[in-house]
Length: 410
Ligand SMILES: [Ca+2]
Image (cartoon, rainbow, N blue to C red; front, side, top):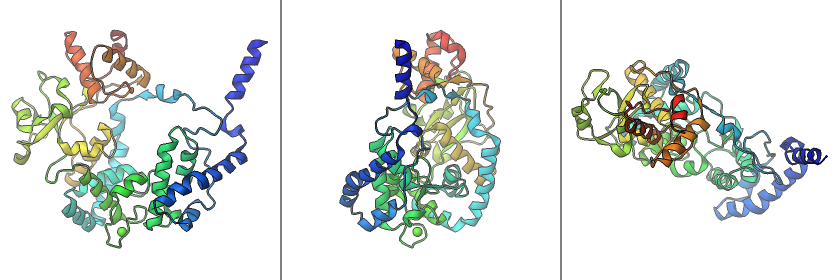
């Protein structure tokens, strides 16, 4: 009997959001907007008319992820632990790369003057802007359809990161107040990222730019403003004019993959002296030789290798993923230079769970390795820690998680 009662209680506590008293929660949401959000917005210069227009007809969106309605507890992040740790090759499937390249070439022609003007102003090449634009919103052709005030209102009111989203909501109101676009045109992703470049509202306030000279940064409806905004963001995050993002290379077997990472950068001429060559057979450009470069092996020895410049790490400021930055740079090269696939082949890696990788990371941490946090992802710190651990075992380093390591690292 006691077991039954416990089970019943547990079932009640775990009521899904759908079973809650939604009208009452909607009412709480309206009060929260007036009592919490409005005073903060007013302090930032938002006028009452703008505020009312932004929330006119806006109700909670109960379908968004990570919601924590009043009186409930955040759900355990089970899905994340059990998420698949896939092969990096999936990121570069022929459909995504081919589509981004094909449409990117059309966009390069259609927006040639805006791209050239922006490159002159910021030093960020058009092909790089195109790579990001394509990845973020399919050059504006993938509909960005959520109402930002509904998304950020809902997540600011009831989500696992309510404070963060409330700050973003205030920033969205500031954007509406400045009149960059009518509030109903301010569409976002389900996570609150705005328009064609997918800027969070606070990033918009810092980096959005006017590309067509009308005094507004309309990243929803203006391609020129989208192009200018992406380039401005990269310039402000350290893009160095005149330098490439990186080069696919061949790494001699005698060099360890554990040499990877921006904190082990050295002049590109030193890498060349160590025997690293461009896979194209061309030499590294003369102006790059004395400048800094670092080794990047996104799948360790089981995939293509690169010497990347600090510009690669400016791309990562847009989205903190090696594969993202590599995709953007690579698609840019294909658009501009008609390059084909990477010459290095992606090996059969992946097929693990993120929880498996996190377990390996914790084991490596116990041995004193810096894996950059046990997050279940294989960033460069994790990859080279695996390589260093393999070296101490007398193995040839491969620098990427594999199933047999789960047992070896236990
Ligand atoms: Ca404009």
